[in-house]
Length: 142
Image 1 (tube, helix red, strand yellow):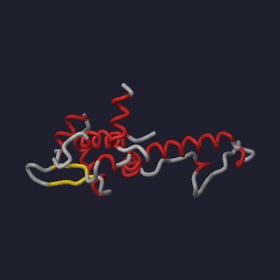
Image 2 (tube, helix red, strand yellow):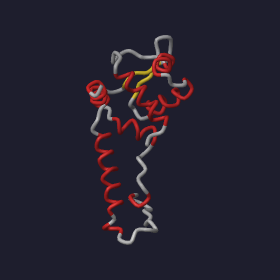
Image 3 (spheres, helix red, strand yellow):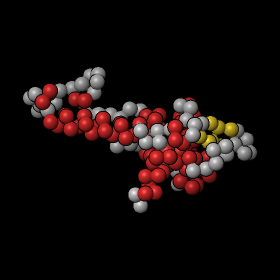
Image 4 (tube, one colour):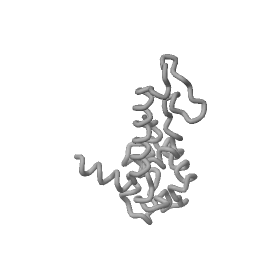
């Protein structure tokens, strides 16, 4: 459903959300703690910085930190930054929608309706779940 880039980006953001908000964390530390290849992580963090989700500082005590409070950063925003929009089935796309060759009645297609519901629900959950919410849910579900 999401790429390895987005998965690693989420892991890095969760790690940063659990650290002191004003402390810059080195790429090496994030890479070591979250088992993310350093070169790949550099590109991921640069993309998150361009989207104003991270701040960076160069130097001995440099690194990255969240640009916003973790309760203001949604999981959906992170995934969209790294992967783009969730790709729906071709018949659900707003532009360039394709009619399935086996679909007789597009407006009454139950498969299309359930896939549309799944996409809408997924987007809602991702957009309304912050880094803080996700950390709370992972702790309570164990």
